[in-house]
Length: 326
Ligand code: PBG
Image (tube, rainbow, N blue to C red; front, side, top):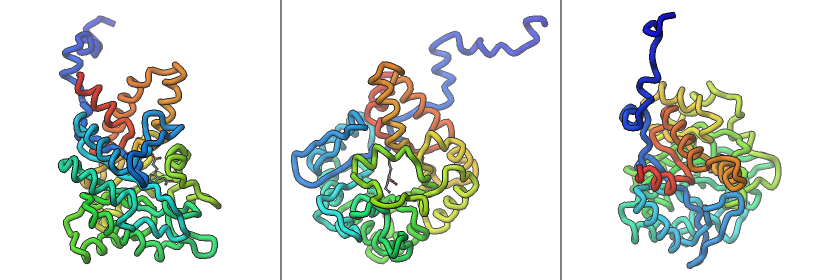
């Protein structure tokens, strides 16, 4: 074969500037959402063993963390609360005195431009660790909906900009939409955790918020990992119920689902680069088995390439700092 007879793709790879010019998927700090774990008290910061670099923090420290994120170009945070007391109905989830509600106002005071999103779920607040209330030996879908709506309203009252229901109860987006509308918050958008899988990759998160189910597991409400087409039904249901943004979670083992959703739907799409995905790179990096920074950017790039518009990631600040250095 004559050397002119086949494509010379390497021509465009020989020069660093040209490679940069041709970059199809440029990550940007403004598409990152940074999760923060908040607990009660003040001046408190506690490490989370399986998530090196990520801490639980009280509202005042969370406000500083939001400023640090903003300084790096990360303009949005996603709050998770850790209550002091858990009970069967997760009653602390809608209390104005709880960590999330306090952190919302602390962040808004010290960093008004930060866009504050809140996770709406009961699992951090229930003593049994399930995402809804229990009837018999099951999570009661319809009895849980008003509690999720109340929680979302309490977040909006505290000043949240957006709420993100993650309980995987059918009808949760519509229940929250009605609740917000009826309480004077028709303009607060909802980001649905639309296709959320029953995943082993949430392990470190459950350590972080102490929410491992005390009996059974979440497979009766979160999706089975093999389900690709069912994810489209979940997403469609959320869009029908009024979700403003849809989500696929986790990201890495579900890039095909992200891709498919991005091609089918015009609703903005978020992907959640979950705790276990973070911990794997942290552990391999600490062992010296992987170049953690490069792997992190490669992972985030893959999520973007799959079609996510927004990436929720514990690496947000670090990645933003690396990106800004060029
Ligand atoms: C709450 C919730 C979970 C995560 C986000 N919201 C845990 C779960 O469903 O068990 C996981 C996030 C992560 O692993 O980073 N329902």
